[in-house]
Length: 247
Ligand SMILES: [Fe+2]
Image (cartoon, rainbow, N blue to C red; front, side, top):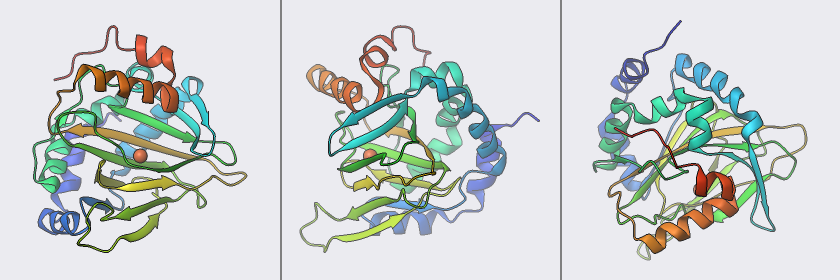
């Protein structure tokens, strides 16, 4: 049965308390977790589509920081377009913007991280503590959605790390299938703990911006980071030659 992304998302967000979410988001230094966010209809569609990307996973290893696999927006556009459709769903973007209290924009078509899949498939796959630094002139808001979870692979995070007037608080979540987290990339210090034997974790990420402009030098820095740590040089520097137009 065909799904209507926007109306399915609308039905889901209509029963959520935006005022409550917004209050918690601010209290948690621009971080929020929403369990069971994705309706089963969309979760199943995204899971099925993600199976088309397993041959496209780019694995990378940075000693003592990161080991795992990623699929960039360019490959998702070809192999799993329902993910691109979900990212662009107006109701989702406006709902997330309502929590942030800011208008959120889609990324430019040449950003390989606009939407991506993260695959943790081999023992020890992980990423060390980091911020999702914004290289844009505006803030970068990261969305993570669990597709397949693994008990060993926890999203561990620290709140208020850049707020000297507030004690740092630490917590972790497993990011269950359908669960969504939203955070300001420059504020949340976070990592994914190492995958154990006989486990597998798949997560989806979306990136939204308050200002889509970026200095050319920072664009180069961002591309180098995405090449080395995520998608490889071929994807990052040639993948955007003919990207689909964003609306
Ligand atoms: Fe991150």
